[in-house]
Length: 132
Image 1 (cartoon, rainbow, N blue to C red):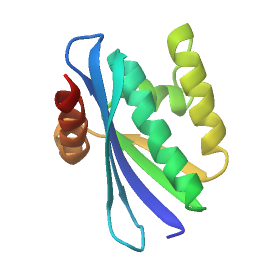
Image 2 (image 1 turned 30 degrees about the horizontal axis):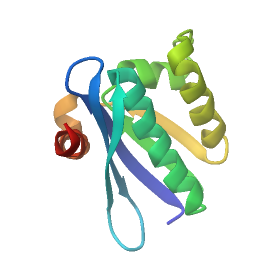
Image 3 (image 1 turned 135 degrees about the vertical axis):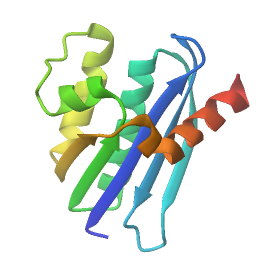
């Protein structure tokens, strides 16, 4: 369990709108972990960061050594890798918290096309539709 791989996605109905997150974490001794959570009325970038934060918190709670994340959000991936600066006041605290959590691990993040992130997307959609 020292190395985990997570697929994360956040979604909303409308932008902003009812929102949910989906996370799939592979590499756990008990098998894949699937998380689907309602996060209230948010915009898509907040939902994407909330999904990343969920994966990071889970990895830290398991005392994992490494976490690689796949996300279909170019904004989140490019901000987390430092390619983009996070200037949005609404995203800054989420970004800062994710960066702080990431420092507890050997962390990496990659962009994947939406179709390669279908399971996490489905979890996010199911979470937001249950509450919408």
